[in-house]
Amino acid sequence: MKKIINTPNAPAPIGPYSQAILKGNTLYTSGQIAINPITGELILNTIKEETTQVMINMKAVLEAANMTFDDVVKTSIFITDMNDFAQINEVYESYFNENNAPARETVQVAKLPKNVHVEISMIAIK
Image: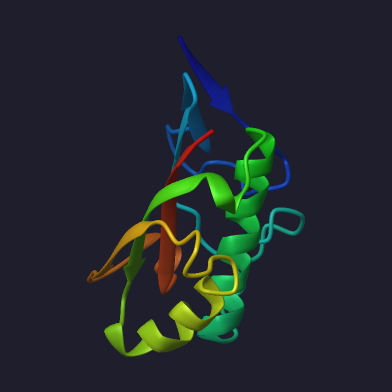
């Protein structure tokens, strides 16, 4: 049986989806963008600040499922400009290190919801 994960510490879904689904010991998160869950405002000042907010939101979703970044086995990163990759990666690697880094793909896309520049989703296993 699947369990819907929902926390007020991450942005509420802006469509017909859940923040995450826990099936057995595997968590599938929806993509997170840089919405501050308290104010509802987008954090788009710099790509580093935007990515930091995405990772803060993802941390909240993981915690709601009693997981941490150490449990993440796969991430998907969608960005609108591959020239931002180094700065996004700089923030991303502050949450992971070489000893616990998950598998990952990074894909440049034409557009993301609310015209953000980065969206990240994860799969975690406890």
